[in-house]
Amino acid sequence: MSSLTNPINSPPLKNLYKKGMKVGISVCDHTRAQPRNEIIKCIMELLGNIDKENLLIFIATGSH
Image 1: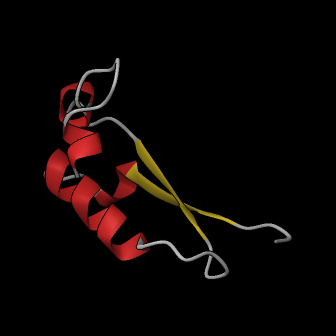
Image 2 (image 1 turned 180 degrees about the vertical axis):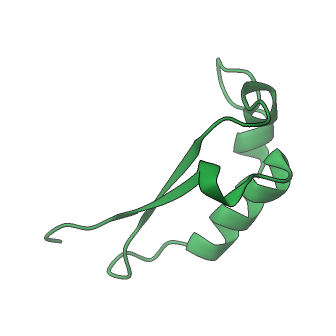
Image 3 (image 1 turned 90 degrees about the vertical axis):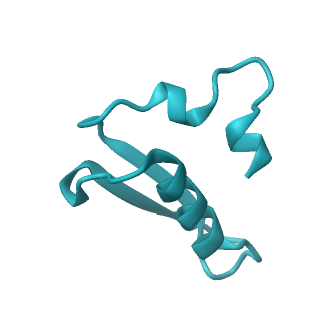
């Protein structure tokens, strides 16, 4: 969470988001150990209420 609230050389994520913007979140597929649920939950909490039609979740797949 701290990397989202205190990023290096960038404003915090919540300062970049404005209500009504489209948001895309990219996560790895099931073949990679990644806390997908926690990542999405943290981002959603930071940004507040995002309209469902403005949210896209990308699942990164590939040959691992």
